Amino acid sequence: MRLIRLLPVGLALLLAVGLLWRAVPLPAASADDPSPAPAHEPKTAETADDHIAQAMKAAQAQHLDQASEELEKALKVDPKHRQALLLVAVVNYIRASQVDPQDSKARVPLMLRSAEAMRTLRDAYKELTPPEQNLLGQIFYNEAVARAIQGQPEKALESLTEAFAAGFNDFEMLETDDQLASVRKLPGFAKTKNDLEAKVKAHALAHAKELLATNTPFPFTFTLTNLEGKKVRLDDLKGQVTIVDVWGTWCPPCRKELPHFIELYKKYHDRGLAIVGINYESEEEAEARKTVQAFVKENGIPYPCVIGDEATQKQIPDFEGYPTTLFLDRDGTVRLKVVGYHPLTDLEAIVTTLLEESPRVAEKK
Image 1 (cartoon, one colour):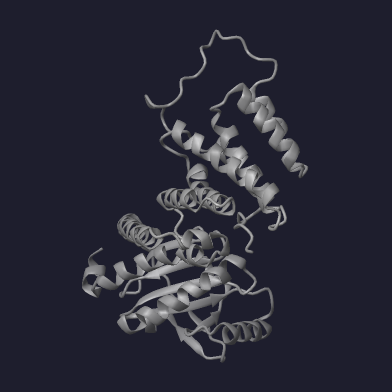
Image 2 (tube, helix red, strand yellow; image 1 turned 60 degrees about the vertical axis):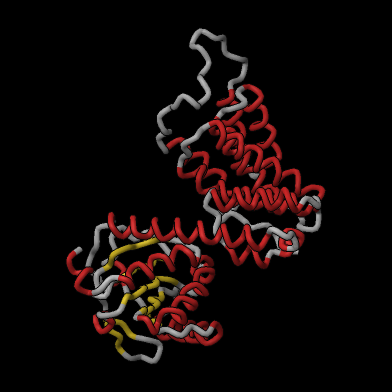
């Protein structure tokens, strides 16, 4: 049985969400939002914020059970407290990930409580902040897993539909997660999956076009040494749409994203797609070359990889970390930079949009 998907940074995410939530301006209140308590209403002995502060201290000390108790107390004071709902969703998500995957009795209630809190938040506040939106789809996916474990595949399929509507788009997970075997046996599963795929692809394509239209292009070039010790010039790839993957073999999200690049290369290389991996390893260049050579051979990477240097990395504006993916049009201009892991659907939408352009069209933009 597979573990439920872990959040990328585990316990640290809980603390980060608590801090980030405070830093993100909340959307303007609408008529649908719950009204705040009147100013003259007497305060309780301990406010919801008091309990949240205690919860964050407990989380920092890695006492998640205590953190959960404090957050539930906060919601008793204020059932629609926005930050408390978000943190209840996150802390229960993490607690569930720490339970033995065979222990469904302990795991399922945590997954369901996480989704319940997230759904309450979504229904109470129609416009979500980035931390809220980023968690929504994954948490609803885990609710589907919990429903399937409970023997409720129909309800699990409903949760999956909500998950994909909220932004979850890992169709490979949908097909391979053994916890969803009962859902895949439902008569309506195939049609639902096809409908979801069509909607996700349409959304990804629209989003890709919006990003490419609004992003500020920038120049980028390099002459770097490949794994055989020969020089590779990025300018030689002009005329093709090019993905430059800035990554390292040591980087988990880089390795997770790698199969997507391999698939894109095989699918679109004959249509004019080139891919180059720029590796940044912790070893000296000679040792780094050996490390990458072994990795490339083991994973069947069909496109060239080169060893990066500091000057190349400095050309990337506001470099944040690995992986960083650059999408260049046929004229060799970087039209988009994305950071971190991205699902195949999103990457493919960007590639197909750029492939549809001609060099002359790209030059005018």
